[in-house]
Length: 543
Image (tube, rainbow, N blue to C red):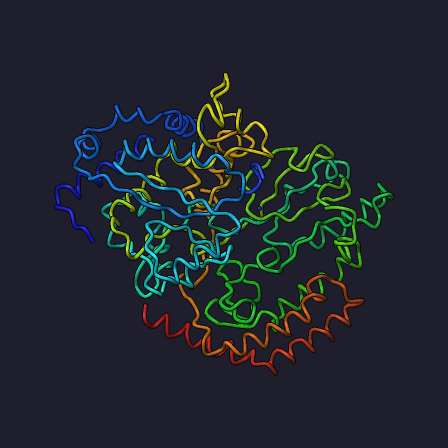
């Protein structure tokens, strides 16, 4: 690694710090006060020429050539609305040259992301910056132990804003073999669960959804059973339609659980205990717990009563757009517009009273520096800018001012020109998990909410989230790989009926679940729990 003299190191750190001082659908997936919004808007409006007003330290670092010009390569994935790569590249070239005397070559991937990145990492190919996304098949935890990434703790002097993104507990949670290899994307790093609800129907039925005290979907039974009766009496034409849209999985919609090995080895989350028979330090099999039995029984009751549909796939189109639907399970929503589901009914948002988080919310998506990066210090400075500069953060999501968006008479961003047709946009990458810190972005109100409410609420919920007890613990599944595979086959056989409420009676649920548990045990479920508990105790002892 190239080493800089101490004086230059301090200058560059001050330069990046000075920069920060300057500066799943719209508004649905997912943050400020008016003052924060105005400050952010001012930074976004700043073209690269705004560097003329930068601090003396910044001018010294970039203006007199002390930073040697370098080029870096950045590999990331977008969702498809990014044909104007050349315009984004040109704007970034100007800005990065001004700020950090470098060029960052954009390698924009789409459906080929997994194949390209996996091959690159496994072959030992040199790279500078790379997006890691477990949901797209490139898991940080899979590759972090393979010596393909640069240890970031050696670069904190070049990334003070990056270091400040998260508390030490989060950085500890993403350590692998004692090193931090990835900068998690600051976004909704918690399970922010709740409902988008039909406020029109709620008002017609005299129901107060906003005032309910719910921590999860297990809490809604009394309300939902009464609501479906009221609905069908007042609107008999709605009978046979589900009151609640589908919630496909028990965690995190119905329960908060720290899933150490899928549902085969879990721990309770302190403050949101799913099964009070266990404390948060005891590993148990969710499927063999009273909590899962209660969940499966509830599903059957809901289907029988018409709260859930027997088969959502048999219905004509998504039920979220039907005026008969009252509650639509929501994940990650922090603000919505009243027409989120169209103009058939008015939508409002109900977030559960408690939100929570676990390790996966920080290891799922982020950016790493290559182990063989020739300029790791500069790569970290780029990461610092991505995570602290609203101009860059907004550019990478909504494009170039004048080309893709503009300010209206009220000083608010509006999509225009090459982004006027959002179905065929030139560059529209909300919410841009590849591009670092989401909470500093400015954008159209339909995406970020009034006064950036979406982003401010994300920060609020992240701060309030209850934390799983074992942040950073990762199971080595090698000793139990055969048992996990065998139990997974059993799981697929039974959960398709138990999780959907498609059994005929409560007796059938109990009988089927007993068979399920017996087969799980026969295929090694107890060995899985025992091994995970052993590893957990060893991990705690070594902390």
